[in-house]
Image 1 (cartoon, one colour):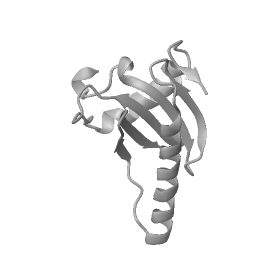
Image 2: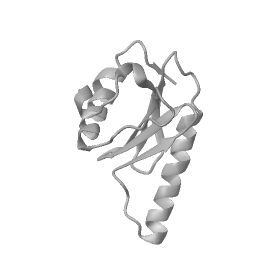
Image 3: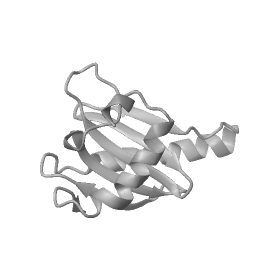
Image 4: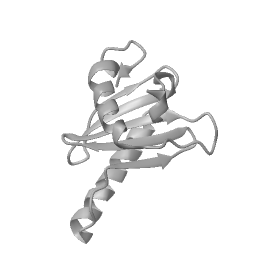
Length: 123
């Protein structure tokens, strides 16, 4: 998996699931990062994206990345909505290379790993 540029589980500080309108459905945190402010940031961004798409006719992107002091927030669009990951950065300039493999990996990770892994706590 790492050859595809996908994150290691240890790099994931949190995960949040949003519906197709950008409303939060569920979120998970890890002991390494208990703060959920980043989920609010994603919610606000998705709302702004929806507004811009509807008023300006802009297309909805497949993914976005937001750099924060804590790490990179990667938001992937999928059929049922969005999945956002908060990823720890090893270096300040580090940013993931997002490609089509991310969507499948994140959907599988959200459905089969995060909900069953003791390292992730639902909030």
